[in-house]
View 1 (spheres, rainbow, N blue to C red):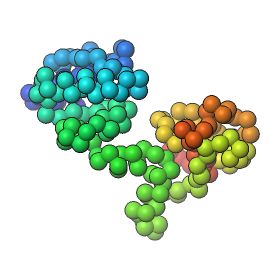
View 2 (spheres, rainbow, N blue to C red):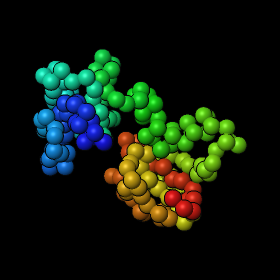
View 3 (cartoon, rainbow, N blue to C red):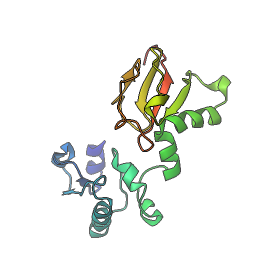
View 4 (spheres, one colour):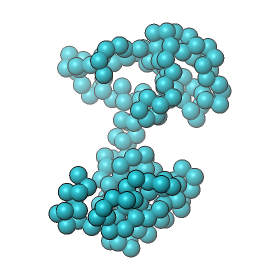
Length: 177
């Protein structure tokens, strides 16, 4: 897709906070800029992104990974230049618990073509049920990272589960992915 964008004449500026991003070496990009880590220094990230937009008169910012969640926290004037859904919808869809609620509210049950697992939030170790028919995963996570299958009482520590790091315990659903 990026090749097509470049081929039709768009100027592509890439920026990333990773130390060795693969995109840095894409043939045809106009420039690459390293950014401060938004997780470690959100204010510096904000300033750097705004400076790049001004310096290159950028029309559209297209996030490709987690930076979308940091960009969603920037002022609304800036968001007009970001290719993404409204921040409230973005966070609703990324939160595994609110996503399930959103699905059940937006789609009539007779039209749902998938089974929604029963789910509960877990913000304390004592709330974890040892149950082979469930899984545990962070409320916010990617690609099944940190997934705990068939959780046991001591599968996580209080450093893993607390009010600021909520997990979801869900009914295990088997079948084809």
